[in-house]
Amino acid sequence: MLQIQGFVFNFASENTYIIYNENKNAWLIDPGNMSAQETQAIDNFITENGLHIQKILLTHAHIDHVLGLQWAFDKFKVPVHMHHEDQEILDMLQASGLRFGMTIDPVKVEVNYIKEGDELDLDGEKFKIYHVPGHSPGSVVYHNENQKFMISGDVLFEGSIGRTDLYKGNYEQLIEGITKKLFVLDGDTQVFSGHGNPTSIGFEKQYNPFFK
Image (tube, rainbow, N blue to C red; front, side, top):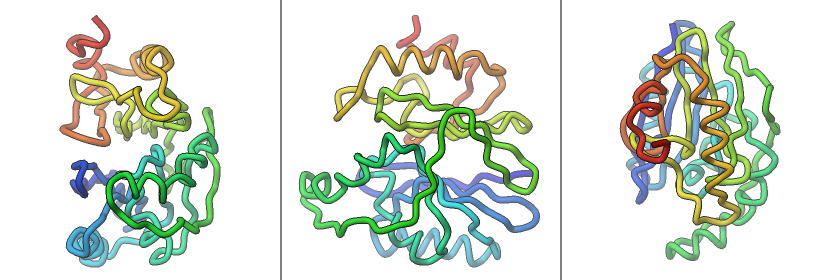
């Protein structure tokens, strides 16, 4: 049985997640830890629970989702999984930081590119990958069909969708991707978003104002 632990980090109240199982094997998703206190909080959780981080996953590479990426890679020494379309976004991290008054070193990590249709495996628990661009060009969703949940990044929120006014954003593309790839899934599927509270596919199909 998989467990999901969420942390709310940095100036954007970004959700970082750790998914782990009874074997203590774990994935770290969207490490947004920015301050020393935030880094200590996530480090303590991993240590106290004896977790072994096997993969670092990115739903996308916007600054608020990768502020702790270099720390995570240096500490756990495992590849970073992301869509190749967001490599350009990751490469812009320094420039993005300057816009927020932050000086950030270039990220130097080992990257494994993932794409639509790929599957990742955590000790037999399969995660399907959906490429749902529109918020960023390489936004992906990680879906575990067995336990009916997904990590949606900034694709879909409780009562909202990701911003499409950012670099290479596309409103029509995002709406189409959510409709055709996510809303066809079981309505009981839980959605763990990049910001805000968890929701479900059924709730969003019925109540999300962007799909009325």
